[in-house]
Amino acid sequence: MPDDYQPRGLAAQEILRRIDAGSGGIAAKIDSWPKPEQIVPALAAAPYPIEALPDVVREAVQEVQGFVKAPLSMVAMSAVSVMSLAAQGIADVERAEGLRGPCSLFAITVAESGERKSACDKFFAQPLRDYEQARIDEHVEQTKDFEAEMAAWNARMEALTAGLRKEKGKAASADSVAELAEAQRAKPEAPRIPQMFYEDTTPEAIAWGLAKKWPSAAIMAAEGGMVLGGHGMSKETLVRNLALINVLWDGASVTVDRRTKESFRVAGARLTVAIQVQSGLLLDFVQGTRGLARSSGFLARFLIAWPDTTQGYRDFSDPPPGFPALSAYHAQLRAMLERQGTLDEHGRLVPRVLPLEPAAKQAWIAWHDNVEHSMRPTREMADLKDVAAKAADNLARVAAVLAVFEDPAAVIVAERHICAAASIMNWHLQEARRFFGQITLPTEIADAVALDAWILQRARDNGKTRFIKRDLQRLGPLQKPLESEHIRAGERFTQALAILEDAARVRIVREGRSWLVELNPALTGSERHGAKVS
Image (cartoon, rainbow, N blue to C red; front, side):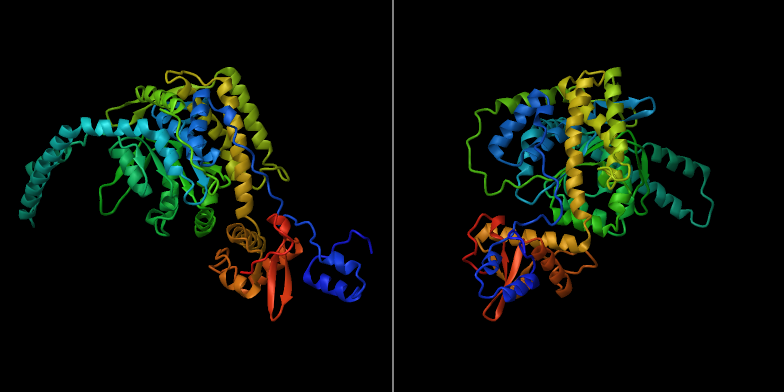
């Protein structure tokens, strides 16, 4: 038998122990651990392409990240999402004749609670929050006048409808009908006051706000479960609301029909979405929609980031006096706010159109074709056609956001903007491959990945590298990959544990009357046998 042979699996180890009992040779080697293998070939996380951002943005991101200590990609996505909100009210981007659309971006950061996304959003979005509040303050008297006019209008309508009820059994007079129609046409219009931020709300409420309040807004939430898992995404409303958000991303018009309230039409509106969601909640959302979140193109519209946590490594640092880099970023945002698109007589945005300059268009076409070819069988995006199909559109959007931030009066998207956006989009496509590659694993592999992660986290938290098998089954992770079953269900737990053992990540040993699961010390850098038992 070769000297470098390493048996894997409890059965193989026991057979060799018996064959070589007392030999002192192979039995001694059995006691050493084989090198642990990956359960699935994992794509390595690439560093965020911070150099692709304009100097002002890059320096602001680095400054905020140095203080907040959140993952760099999360900080960068907060900055770019705020830029999207400011830019979408100024310009649309035209990729080619007939291919015109918003520059609005949808972004999801897959991360656990406590990663400080709210703090990042607050730092970058402050000028837009101030702008929103200033407009509210300016319209205080106008709002009061509107409320008084509405009260008078409601009283008049009640009187007219009461008069019609008195004519019950008779044909309504032409004068009564004409007077009622005139009153309907005279309904007061609410003043257009910017509401630019939404958090805990429903897609329908956002659409109503875009139609009736202000046609440019953003959903920014550090707890994306409120958006993806709220009552706005219940079984009864899921299909309608996924379609509604898709339409808003496209910048198209849509009519929202309601039975008990006034129906309305959204047109000329723009929406940015920037949410953080825990991986488990996102997985539950994907599975709860029975594939609709993917097949409808909803998730394909999002730029995805899946950063490693920085929690536990965020030693406090004093902030830079005055945040000079962030102040320069804020100055550009204020310049963008001064050039927000005008509204037509119906309250719809009229953004100007930014075409791609010829060199930029050629660069965009080359990138578009490269991504298109990557969807062929056996190529890297073959299993992510939905994401790849929206990628070139998102590339143009990112480029337009960069162009408008650089110069709020810009009239074209230059080649350098396309090249910078391509670096950012290449990174997001890699992140999509990493994340969706994990959530589309076969059930037995997904179970093993979750069990492995749970064991490793306990080892990092409290140094325990040996677990009583019965307790591990009883207390282990509660993932629900199929029909609300738990991993700890007997057959699935056994199968997941066998996969980990076969990959030399754990081994099962007998100690007294108990079976223990030992973690391979190479995974934690600890001694060969953990001193603690869970």
